Amino acid sequence: MEPSHEILERLLTKSTWTSEEQAWMLEYLQETDQHALRQLMQEKFEQDLASPTQLPATISERLLAQIHEQINATPVRAPKLYWKKWLAAAAMVILVAAAAFLYLQSKQVTPVPVAKLTLKQDIAPPSTNTAIITLGNGQQIILDSAGKGLLAMEGNVQLSKTADGSIVYQGSSDKYLVNTLNNPRGSKPISLVLNDGSKVWLNSESSLRYPVAFGASERQVEITGEAYFEVAKKAAPFKVAVAGKGMVEVLGTHFNVNSYQDETYTKVTLLEGSVKLYLQPNGNGAVAIKPGQQAIYLSDQQKQSSIQVKNDIDLSAVVAWKNGFFNFDHADLKSVLRQLSRWYNVDVVYQGNIPKRVFGGEMQRDLNLSEVLKILEKNNVHFKIETDKLIVMP
Image (cartoon, rainbow, N blue to C red; front, top):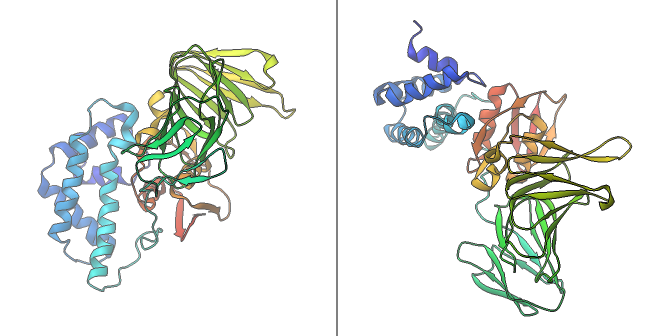
C-alpha cells in the first residue's frame, strides 16, 4: 500500500480530489500526530529552499495551530464546501513557502526562487468599507471616515451610521429625495436599512439608488452590481430595477440580484417568499419564481430578451460573498478573475492566449491575493502581481 506521506504529497499537487481522496485527507489530518506534520513541513521547507535549513520552531507551531483550527471547525458532512474546508491542507504548503521567505528575509539571505508568484508583491483583502453616499443635494458622505451616529437629515428622515458600520434611514418625508450608495471596487460589503425597514447588503463595485422615504403606493430602488435584499412586508409592492435589464417585484421576501455590467448575465435568485420578474418593456408579461429557483435574463443577437428559470440552486453558493467567501462553482477563469478584480481592486491583464480552465468550490475572502493565486495555480494557470495589476501568464 502507498505510504501515507506519499499519498499526501500526491494530493497536494492535484487541483481536484475525488470524494475518497477528500475523506482520506480529513482522516489523515485528524489522526496524524504532530511530529509527522512537523516532519512534512520541514521537508517542504527544505525542498522549497533547496537547502537543509531548519524550519524555526515558532513558525512550525504557528502553522500547526492554524491547521488544527481549520480541522476542528470542519463538519464531516459538507460536500459543497470541500475546497473551503480542506483549504488547510493546501494552505500548509503556501504558509511554509511564505514562512521560508520571511525567515530568510530576517536573516538577510537571498532565497532560491521556488514559485511563479512573487511574494514580495502582494495585496491584502479589504479591511474597511469605502462606500460613499450621495445625498439629494449632491453632498457626498465618505462612510469609512464618518463617525457613528447621525450623518445627515434628508427632509424629516434621519440618516445614521451604527456601531457595526450599517447605514440606517429612519422617519418619513413628503419630499421626494433620492440618495445613491456606491460601494467601490476593493471595498467590503456594506449593509443598509431603508426607511420601510427593508435591509440591503451591497457587494463591492455595486451601487444602489433609492428614495430616502417611500411613497404609500410603491417602493422602488435601482441596482447595479450585486445586492442581497430582505424586504419588509408592506402593502405597497417593492420593485428593483436591474441595471436597465428588467424589473423584480415583491411584497416581502429574501433574494439576491447579480447584475454587473462586465458579466454576460443578470441573475435573480430567490431564497424566501416569491417574486415576479418583468422584461423591459413591461408589456411582455411576468415570470414568477419560487425559493431555490434562479431567473437569468438572456438576450439573443437580435436583442430579443427572455428569462430562463433554473431549479435546485445552491443558495449558499449564491450568497457566499455576503458570508465572507468567494464561490467559483463551475466558473471559468475570466469569471473567477473578475471576482478577484472587484475584491482586491486590481486590473487583470492577459499575456498570450487565455487558458480554458473551470474551477469549483469556495474560498475565504480574508486571504491575501497571493494565497488565493497559489491555490488557483494548482489548476495549471500562472500569475504574477505588479503593483495594482494581476497578470495572467501562458
